Image (tube, rainbow, N blue to C red; front, side, top):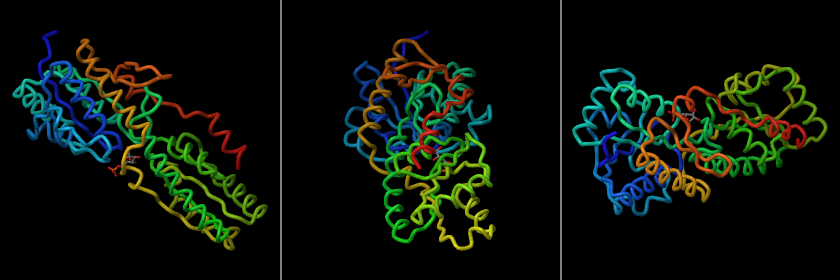
Length: 327
Ligand code: F6P
């Protein structure tokens, strides 16, 4: 393998708090290893459209604490085509970039693997998504911050729910995974948590809510993951409103939505992002490619990208049982 002289870094897919901390770590680790580094704006879109920017130690000053991503992010349809990837590879070649650090989720890594397979670019991934749904790491960059944002909002909802003895359905993000729902449900003392990983049996849910509401005559909070099979909080709300048993129950649905994606990263996300950014550059320098760096049981670990996007990370079913015991 030829020596790497210049690397590229990009953020792609849904942004996550801590992406900037990761970009900063990548740039500074590259400089420490005598590598030049270029940022690629708007992920694969920018790679195709020649949106590259030189970066150095100073260009990543004062971004550690900010949400979003200074490199911007996008979901690229063109990159899914071989022609799109040809263009991207030609631009990388033009700038002498033979290795990349990709910060994103499974879609980002599928693209990175293709780039490696078809054009021989060495890519190392850093897991960046609020959903925490990536195999090969205990936590993804952004999950902790999103979770704390959700929790802060659930606490606020609890105040008003309690004041009115209301039933609240609170939808949190997670199109395919229930990590935010499960953890914020436990942290926020939710009476029920509905996630895509389990079957939502409407009759059972109705019965449970009715018994909670009649036994306690106080607030009840149901956390619903966006990807729950009934169509999130709105879907559950509709099903309950159509049932005459719920006619006397004061019910509201709240969707937390993209509030969970923004904001300054938590301490834990800043440390994780910094650690993974440095580990990604070191992995490239050591000759690794087509892998993701993660943290498993406190240790950094490399996992082939193929495993990251083809295997499903399981939720902790013991935590799900906890929600039943504690409600
Ligand atoms: O993958 C992160 C995520 O926030 C999901 O939880 C959510 O379903 C999706 O992105 C929303 O994507 P967009 O911002 O493109 O609507």
